[in-house]
Length: 151
Image 1 (cartoon, rainbow, N blue to C red):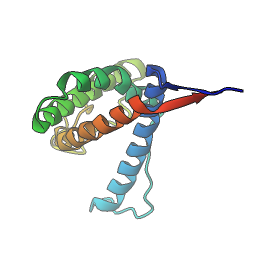
Image 2 (image 1 turned 180 degrees about the vertical axis):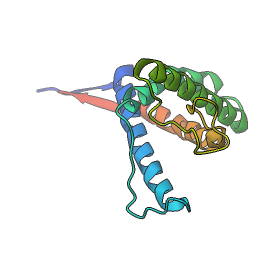
Image 3 (image 1 turned 45 degrees about the horizontal axis):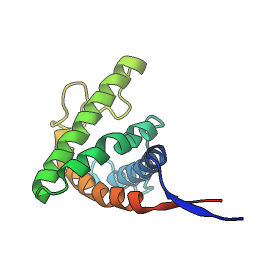
Image 4 (image 1 turned 90 degrees about the horizontal axis):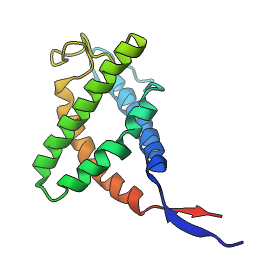
């Protein structure tokens, strides 16, 4: 039996981004619960939403082409572009979910003075999204080179 290798296709990368997003979100929310003074939950309970798998999966369709287009720009420009892009997707998907199911699962209303009306976006998370975008550059490059063994 002969095996061959091929690169991951876009749908496979979308699934990988979705699963990585879930893991990152669960780790972030668990750590945040321990670090925020008004929460102080040392059980490190992280959470996410089933909606997030396809939302994080959009990375394969939206971030990858953007990364390819801006990769030669200075890091500070890329970071700003990524933060703005991620917040735009967060706003669009949050608004769509509010219209479709009646709620934004990650509703930030009342959690920060920097939350936009409707609760789908927190402007104070821009630095987190900027760093996340820069980290996604490496993940994108790695997934592009990651071969899948087909038997």
